[in-house]
Length: 341
Ligand code: SP5
Ligand code: ZN
Image 1 (tube, rainbow, N blue to C red):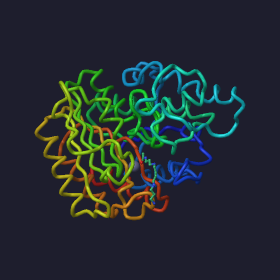
Image 2: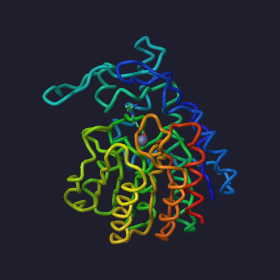
Image 3: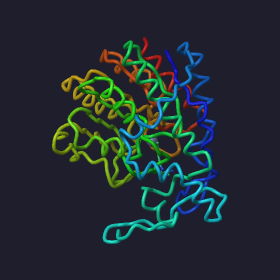
Image 4: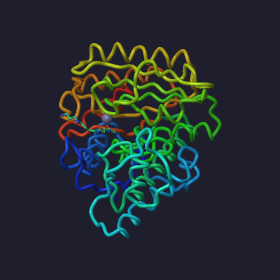
C-alpha cells in the first residue's frame, strides 16, 4: 500500500499538555510516527511516498482565511509578546462574552482554541501544513487510480473546525482529503471516523452539506472529550440533513457493542452510495490506551479493516489518534492488513 508520510511532522513538538490542571508530557508526541511507519512498512509492504506541495488552495477550501493567518503567525506573535515556551490560551470568548476583536495574542489563542490540551510550538504550522499536503497527495492518488492509500501524519485533524484548533488538531486532514476528491470531481464522499473521540471538527465543517457524509463512532461525549458535540440527535442541517451520523458507545465498550455500532455505520454508508471513502483512522479505542477506556484488541482492528475493504470503495486512510507506543503500530498495521486481505 502507498503510505504518504509527513516527514516534517516533528516540527510540531509540544513540551506538555494541560491535563486535569497540570502540564503533563504530550500524549500526541513525535515518537508515534516512527513506530507506526516501521510497523506498517513490515506488514503491508508499504511504499513510502513523499507528499507534493499543492499550496494553500486545498487547505483554504476547508479553513477560514482569518484562522489560517492566525495559525501561520501564532508562534511569531507569541514570541514577539516575550514568550519562548509553548503557546496556550487562558481566556475564551464564552457565551455572552464575545464582544470586540482583541488583538492580543492571548485573546486570539482563546478565540481560535476549543481546548487547552494543544500546545502551539515554533514548528506547528510547518508540520500541519505538510500534513495537509500529505493527505491531499494521498487523496489525489486514490482518486486517480482507485487504489487505497494511507496518509501517515501528525498532528491529527478531526477535532479542528473551519476556524478552531484543539484536541491536538490544527488542520482537519480528513476533511481536506474528502474535499480534495470533491474538487477533483467526486459527487459524494463519505468520512468514517473510528477514532475513540467524536470527530467534532469534521462534523461541523460538513454539517450543512449534502455531498459529504460524516459518520463517527465514539465514546459518549457526556463523559468524554469533546463533551459539547457528538450526540446522536446531531443529524445534519439544510442540505446536510441526514448526512451526519453519530454512534455513541458507553465507557468500557469492547468489540461487542463497538461492532454493533460499526454495522450501523457501514449500513448508512452503503445506503448513501458514496464514490469514495475517507477513514479517520484513530486507534485509541484499543484496550491499552490510557487516555481512553474502550477495550478493542489488535485482532478487532484487523476485522475492522476487513469490513472496510468489503465496501469496495476508493479509500483514503488518514491517521488520527492512538497514543500507546507499545501497540499503535500493530493496530494501524492490523487495519491496513485487514483491508488488503
Ligand atoms: C485526536 C485525538 O485523539 N485527540 C484527543 C484529545 C483529547 N484531549 C483531552 C484529554 C483529556 C483526557 N482526560 C481523561 C483522562 C483519563 N485517564
Ligand atoms: Zn482520539
